Image (cartoon, rainbow, N blue to C red):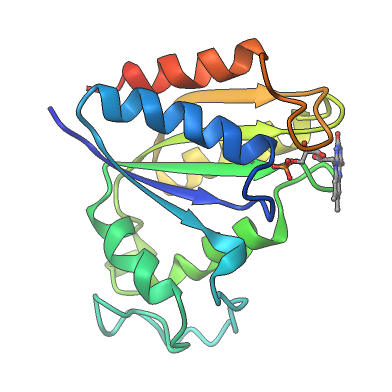
Length: 182
Ligand SMILES: Cc1cc2nc3c(=O)[nH]c(=O)nc-3n(C[C@H](O)[C@H](O)[C@H](O)COP(=O)(O)O)c2cc1C
């Protein structure tokens, strides 16, 4: 079955290591007939959550703040799979990605008990070192809290500069993960 995939790319570098992982994954997923929409968050106007608890009233535009999250919300609603893609920043996800994730609370606010929509999820990450443990712990716990199912993680350590990821086996891993989605 053709699946809808929404990618939240939290890297600020369009040609960086995270984006290259995203590209490889997308190539594979599209080859298997899936529909992929990537949001390059750094180039979008997405402000931090205000914590007003006033969202959820309008399904198409659930947040009280009106910004580029209004492009993400419909794709998020329709997505079978949400990909969280990010460089490792200070042993966690980038601010760009965290901002967008916090803003998804407005969707839950429209549901009884702040229930989140059911999704599958994937984590794609790049880092200079290999200190992914804290972020993987957070991601796994997030899956439990949201009652989402993780269907894969690709973590590429040892990459810092633009182009460092070229030739790395994690690109093939990401492509194959994409291909496996049917
Ligand atoms: C603000 C900042 C914080 C970073 N923190 C870490 C870190 O905690 N651990 C690590 O291994 N690399 C860290 N890095 C390096 C990046 O994760 C690495 O360069 C990665 O490949 C960048 O991905 P990108 O090409 O998608 O931007 C940091 C880089 C920046 C700019």
